[in-house]
Amino acid sequence: MFKKKILLIGTALLLTVVVSSAQETVKADSLGKDAVQVPKYEELVRMYARLAAKVDSARQRAIEDSILIARFIEESRQTALAAMPAPKKPTFWTNTMLSQLNFSQTSLTNWAAGGNSSIALGGYIDAKANYEKNSVIFQNRFQIGYGFVKMFGDILKKTDDRLAFDSKFGYKATEKLYFSAAFGIKTQMAKGYKYTTKDTTLVSQFTSPLNSTLALGLDYKPLPWLSMTFAPLTGGIVVVSLPELRENYGNKPDEKVRMEFGAQLKIKLDKEVFENVKVDTELVLFSDYLNKPQNIHVLWDLSISMQVNKFMSANIRTNLIYDDNIKIADKYGNKASRVQFREILSIGLSYTISNK
Image (cartoon, rainbow, N blue to C red; front, side, top):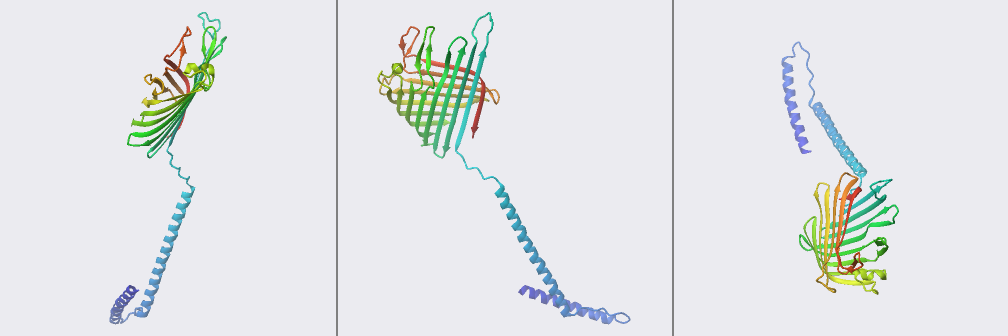
């Protein structure tokens, strides 16, 4: 307000000087000419006041317009935010599911070279659900596989039967070392037979046998795709529900459930070694403190898969087992501990669902 008064007084003084100068000029040149009318001081003050009022009004309108524009921008921003989908909550799970289906068929009619018409079908599902956050890891894997071959004129024969679940919980002790607890269970779904030229002998069925373990120890992960778990405290049970099969798997005739307690070493590798070529292998060594600890039980699973395109793949899976409690008869009927080996080569449909 004080500045306005100073400006007003200065302007009035300037106008007074201009008016006085103009009046003297008019007096000097007024002979024979019309006099020029000059505004009076009061009129100039009123003109200045009107001009100042217009300036204040324009400034007030500019402020109001700025407020309206800012309000419109904020409302538009709020409307845009409301229309956006809600942000996804962070997830610490990595889930994958591999499914494979393989089919082959042979038909022979008047084939001079000989042979039998046959049909074979095999399926395999490998599902993984892994959780990792801060110092905690929780890994789960479920595998199910089944396959058969049927030659015309012969009975259907099972070629693959696997039902397995593995789970591991770990808590980080150092950068690459975890305290771990692991649980595993394995069995088969359907009856299995040993086929001979004369007869068939039942050798397995669901829960005959069933192997389950619980291992406590340390898990060392030097690389993201390699882990080594040593569990000096490993308990296990071997269930054989059928009495006639119990001795084949180390149980006594009246022993449905046999207990095991020992140390376990597990080495696992899961890596894409070349583009579209993945190797997944697991080696488990177990020593039973309660029964001949010097005899090491061996379980080695190997899977090599090559993805041809989105839906086609070639796979080879092998399983090697040695357990001195398992007795296997040879062609002469002599039962003894033997190395078990299975190999499955398949080419067929394959599809993987995953989130990362």
